[in-house]
Length: 80
Image (cartoon, rainbow, N blue to C red; front, side, top):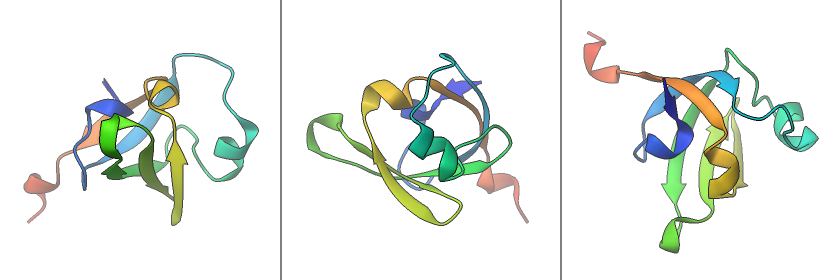
């Protein structure tokens, strides 16, 4: 398992769990839930914020929040 901050732009992962139980309700409403796919779209200058795509919604979150999201990285190179 890795945190969202370990992804490179364009990489995807499946959300497994959150390190803290307190997450902004807006993130949960937009589909940032365990089992859902998440893609790192872009990292802003100075590494904050981080732009992600969850269920077709582009969201900017703080790096500190991204550190709380644990996921399994999807290895697209294995797809034939």
